[in-house]
Length: 400
View 1 (tube, one colour):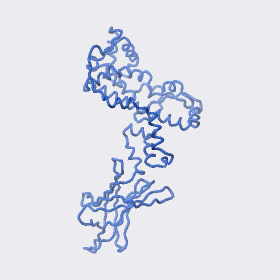
View 2: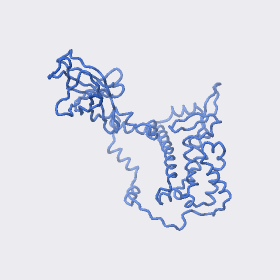
View 3: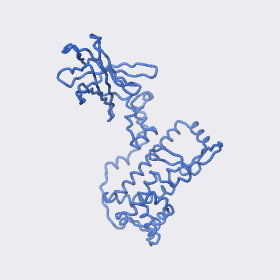
View 4: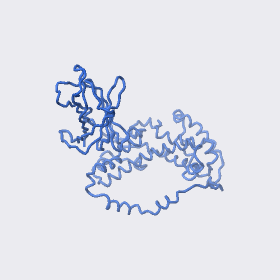
């Protein structure tokens, strides 16, 4: 990562590598991209732990300060920031020039001018805030034992504490003061910080034995031979699971901007549909629809979609009667997805066709779901000028 930042290839070299890479190399690139985004999010989690270190149990504090030494881990991230990279671009004369890019909080790279490299992004701020809590909180100062090596590494950060940084993160004034005091402080040569303290912790013995006694490569080969075949490439559920690890979807999930199944619910079966009707100023659930095993796959010019017949269940003791003017809402529940798809429609029915079913549609298959409702003129008519209708049939359509 650092080597590519310091010695970037040209655009032509990068394009040639992408076009000439094998499937295995493409998978490795996607894996590295997913691991990088995961590591960026892990930095934010580490900052959160450092911010609340005083509330953590002593075992967690020991792992943060001694076992993993979060403070020393933040130093390389500030010294060689992975969220700042140098690439090859072109100017107006089509000459190759070096350009700088910074990673934003939405995992998108943005080109910045060299004069703006000192502007702190959210990713960079996470490390500095973690350093602030690890150096200035009372818990860390009492438990973190300094030695010569730790002191020398910490003082490497002093050169970055300038007026521009302090203007953007005023809390770094305390860190700078700590660095100045540390420069004058005499510390032991080999102090580890653990001393003679006895720390007892509970260990999951059974879990450790299970994890340590497994040959994971042998287990993967066994699963490939036993469970996965060539025909699985056409399995919609497996394709959906595999697409979860696409670079775009991983970025969405790590950002917590959107739910993956909210953007890709169409290949999943519909479990139920609730029909609501406006009664006065309140939307009341009047019908529940459940899918049957009767469906047809229809091919259109744009794409194919599956049309499934729904079983109609009235929520009242008697069949609900609709008026001529309808304001409807449909709540569609999809298997394995916590989200609900909402469709709405405001329309008027006609009594011109007394014996035929009148069809209305909520939504469009091009946007996701389409719900077709078949209503028939009710046999029990009160006021002829105000016809009433009953729900007789329903179908749900979704692209495949």
